[in-house]
Every structure is written in structure tokens, then in C-alpha cells.
Image 1 (cartoon, one colour):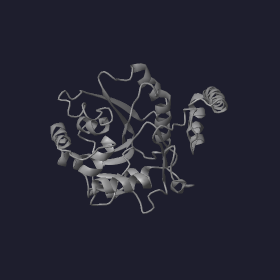
Image 2 (cartoon, rainbow, N blue to C red; image 1 turned 180 degrees about the horizontal axis):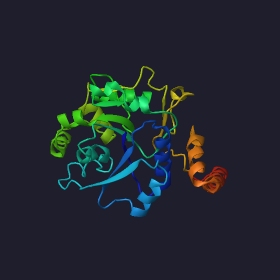
Image 3 (cartoon, rainbow, N blue to C red; image 1 turned 90 degrees about the vertical axis):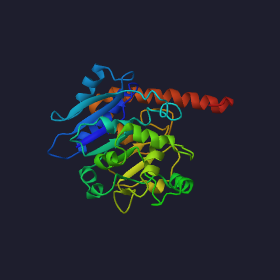
Image 4 (spheres, helix red, strand yellow; image 1 turned 60 degrees about the vertical axis):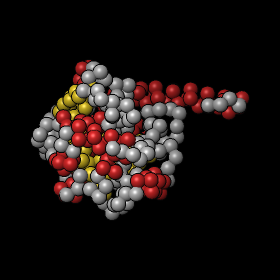
Length: 289
């Protein structure tokens, strides 16, 4: 299986948890390859790569691919090229990669994802994923007038690389499509994928939320399910941050304690206690947060 996972040198331990969770539940005889797509001025240090390799299976590999910035500014100017890295990285993958599973670094896998990866739906569709939460789904469908009435979350998504490159064979062709965008963009990579591939994307299963939890600070609890395969801690709420209440936080820490030890969790609890004391102080004395 081939994966692209977002990288951030400031959150290497959470990234290790993501890697570990994937290798625990990517049940396949073949090795997993994790492609770290990075800009040359934002590369993870070698010691961080060595650190991450400790938490994947021995037969699995991490391949670092360094890409240049786009000097014309059409991507780096109006929209963040860091956000678009998952798309730009498709042009630098080895030729043998026909499909790629993109998982954000703030997501974890908690059950078998083999069926997702090998879904036959990706033979005819370019994008395969799950719907965004209901309020965003309705807003973007109305905003963009999507013909397929489907707005996918780009944080956890399968991409048919061959079909993607057939439509946009070069970075310049994708870049030119961005230049022609006249509508309002609110989440660049996600909006581009959903609008550029309108009618060329689909969902994993009938019950879109049966196996996927997309967690925001404020979200509809009806999306939560007892049987979940992937948890995406979207938005500002992260399980390793002490200042927010978040569903399924314990799922993250189950992995965190297993690979880093109990003191990692104790350190987090201490930070959470400090945050709670400050929160109560501000509440009592009327200071803004």
C-alpha cells in the first residue's frame, strides 16, 4: 500500500502515532511505503526520519520526496502551497504508484483499512473518500453547485494517480486550472479536488459515516459510530493539545502510551491541568481567554 502523510517538524510525535496506527491496521502481505512530500526549506531533519522509522513495520519504508516551490506565485500567492502539497506531490511519485492513500498527520487508523485501499470503485473514479460533515457539505454544494452533489473531505482520501495525471498531466496544467478559478475558495486543496473532479469522485460505502469519524470542535454527534476505522481530528482540536474537549481523544492516547510510554501521557495531563487552572482563573476574574 502507498500512503502520503502530511509532515510537520513541530509535531513529529503525533506523526509517529499516525504512522504506527496505519501499520497496525494496513493488513496486507505487501510492504507499505510512506511518501513524505516536503519542500526543500521545510524538510524533516534526518533524525526525525530515523525516529519515525522506529514505529513502522520492518518491511515498511519511508521515502522522502523533496519538491520545489512554484516561483510564479499562482499557487504560493493566493493559496498556501503547503496546503496543496498533497496534490503537488502526485507529480513526483514513482511511476509504479497507481493509487495513493492520503492521510493527514492529525488522523489515526483504528481498524482494518485494507478494504478501503483496494476498493474497486477507484478503478473508475479519480477520488474516493467520505463526505464532509453535514453543514460544510450543504454549504459547499450550494456554493459550488456540484453536479454530483458530493463534497468529500480531503484529509483522508484515496486518489487514482493515473486518472488524476490523465486530466492534469503536468503541474503547469493544474496550475493553469487554478488561475482560471473565479469562485470563492475556502479550503484550497479540498475545494479544488471537489470542483475540478466534479462527477469523478465517489464514497466508500452507503453509510458514509459508519467507519469514519471526522471530528471538529463543534460537530454533529450523529456522525460518531461505535465501529470506526479512521479518526480525523480536523480543525483546531487535536488530541495532544490540552485546551479542547474532543471525542475519541483516548483513542489517540492508547497508541501514544503504547509507543512512548506512560510519562508521555502524564506530561500531557500536567499540561491539561495547567490549562484548566488558567481557564478557571479567567472565568472567575472575567478575563478573556
